[in-house]
Image (cartoon, rainbow, N blue to C red; front, side, top):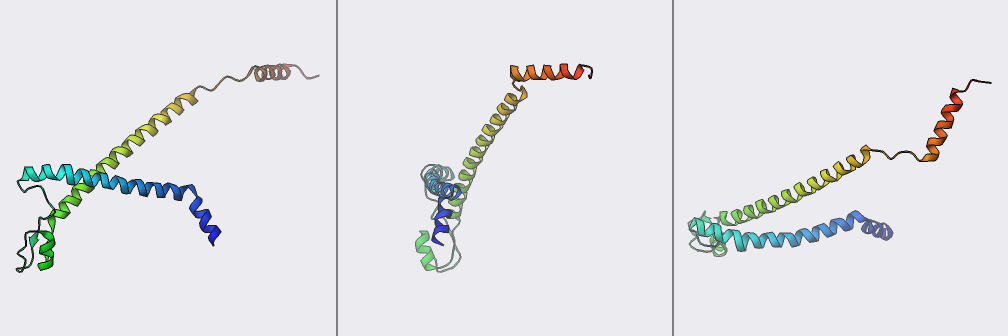
Length: 146
């Protein structure tokens, strides 16, 4: 079983997946920073609601009197829509970046396929010895049988 596990881990696909997960996690931190540090402060300033969407909530219980989400959750049920807005913007930015990456990869792939098709359109002429042998064959065929 240990040898099978080693073979499984040593496969290229598993290693590629591990690298992808690690890079994805690091990329997620970058997107979170863009959303939290750049986008959300501008959106908050434009909407007049300050710079922090994470504390936007609606109290679902009459016992909730707190002004921060963490304190409000301790007091009772809350509808935390501000955090959802942040996560939604985070998702949209990430989806847009992935879309642009896939679009670029598809454009490169199309370009490479086009170059291959153009290169394969004109086959190389046969070597001289093959041409000579073909000519000899054709002459022998045209000769009357003896």
